Image 1 (cartoon, rainbow, N blue to C red):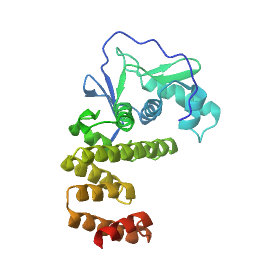
Image 2 (image 1 turned 45 degrees about the vertical axis):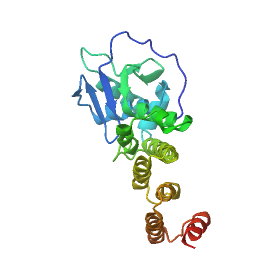
Image 3 (image 1 turned 60 degrees about the vertical axis):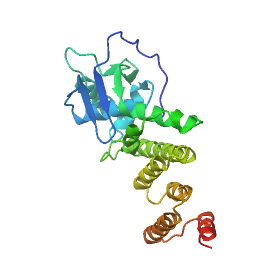
Image 4 (image 1 turned 90 degrees about the vertical axis):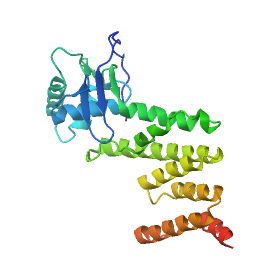
Length: 250
């Protein structure tokens, strides 16, 4: 998301109590209690949470109310900012005359998940050094703001989905090379469940079966994938994968 740089608001020393969930649905909570917000406030908070810096007020109003003229869009933005306020609590949205941003004390699950996926992709070494616990894998399967169809959400959702899939595939490789085949297969099948037509994810399942010595399972997975690809898109697996399977079947 394109943003305009501005001075970040000073951090407060108080412990954070605000948490924002964007994965598998929107929920803002304070001290673990959900906070009810108008839809306009939800959209503003979500847009700011998907970025990592303040955005110009004119940009925020233009993105969120693109069907209005600038005067009405700016009025909608002012109203949305006001609707994010909770008396007696730290503000969720920081507004200046020129910019708006999500307050630094709000914990956002989307940002944590993105950081975790990037660590997975940037680290090398044995599976024991993986920067993610096995019980955290479910977060890599979560969908960003499902049932939201704004253009800015669709773009970020696809960007996040691709990051998830690449992280899952890297995890599968690391587990397989470490001989941890159950974990490798679980992660690879998780990627396949997210995108059954993705050949690189299917290939991880096949490779794990082969590494474990299960040729029949590898061939079954390939044939299942080939049937699905033909039925959904009228296509065949890539020439490289077909040749690879033919070598195994010979």
